[in-house]
Length: 48
Image (cartoon, rainbow, N blue to C red; front, side, top):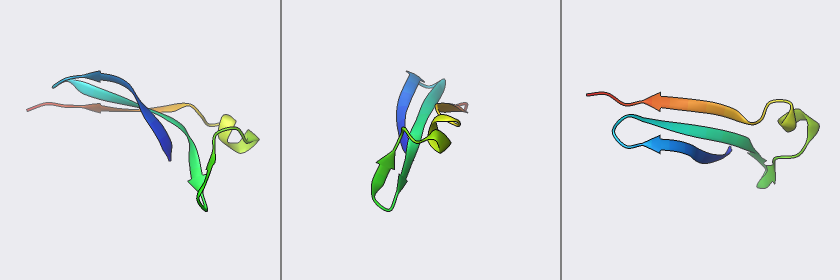
């Protein structure tokens, strides 16, 4: 998976933007299969 941190609010949440996949050592962010799905986001909410 090729990803980057979209937003990080310390002690609150982290948002991760997924941009593509790595298959057999090759990064793919531009094929039709990938661009149909990406970017997608994952948000992790932190609490104590």
